[in-house]
Image 1: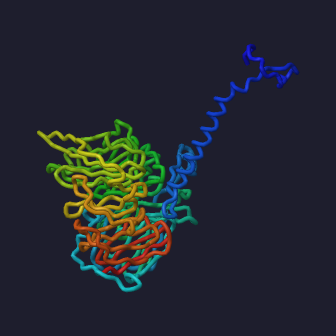
Image 2: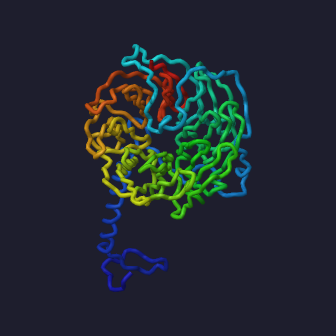
Image 3: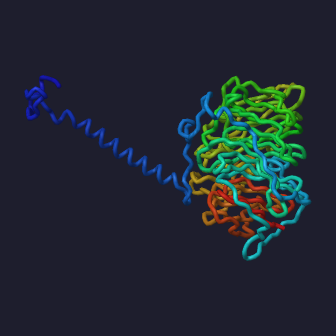
Length: 496
């Protein structure tokens, strides 16, 4: 302390000699301290209010260190044997027709192509429950093919990822293929939708384990550990990417040593790879097939940007175009193709939406940003908007201002044509189109049926179909039967 200040000499030093103390010198420090405390308190109060929406906590990211598993090599986790165990049960495949074979359905648009007539009104107790089964904690949605329902589950007691196959008739389990892998609860365990064809079923587990089995028998074909073998960083809320089977190959957004790759479903052989030169990482979004200017391609929103790579055999995996203008730490919705090279992307957590245009001239592709939208106009936190008859349909997130949690319809130019209104709010749950109707499932299991129309929000009916919490899993609709699930149960509903 300065020797020139001797106005106050009450405080002795450690040797017993008096030292000077000027209270005016500490006033600025005290003011800064008070301001800091008040600011921190306001931030904490704001965070708490924004963290709880309708009783559901906002999900917080966990680092790999805190998520409860070891990422380094040389541990017992290295001995994971994907698909090691199998058990057959008494269930029998149904003879019912209809399919929903992969994430967002047969055409990757979340629209039912079947002409099955669905009810415009439900009985007093809601649509009839054909069967129900208990599942492990999570949000993994089902797929349907050849009278079988496939869902990736997590068995807490066995510490295992399990692909389970059920009968569409009665929900009885037909077979189960699983492997041990330790996972700590991180807002549920599994959350991805399998992909299934006449011959193969493919899953991606919470910790990036890819498994391919025979779709009928459940016999193991192969397994890939993307983290160990390809350097993929496990996303903050585990894997959200759903596998895409195209022909006899599965297409994966790796985000590690490679950006994307195609794998032969029969052998597990790597057919093509897209180099990850910019070190982009795996997001929670899924790879989408698109055809633009006559060229078939795979489009992926990674952590780092969006890319389109060739899906044609002659140059499979070649980067056709890429942009870093859509780069967010959390991206769950998949990109949506609106035709004419327009690709719509959206995300939650305050990020809003954007429309890009992919052009082709003399064989070369380019991509440009058409517009961006604020989160209060159009955004979606978990699920992918539906493009139906020239309009985009979705549910706005909780941070969308006055329109929060409302159903929304918007034209491709970014103009909202209707909102459901302040009395008609929803949650983070899924939505699906069928028979010119849109079905929206709320977090608490309340199912709402509305007209799929750009003319306005028209509610047809509403029923509580699940009694649990966090009904966030994508739905599947096949042959008039709707599959829904919450945190621990899946039900099959008769929508005819």
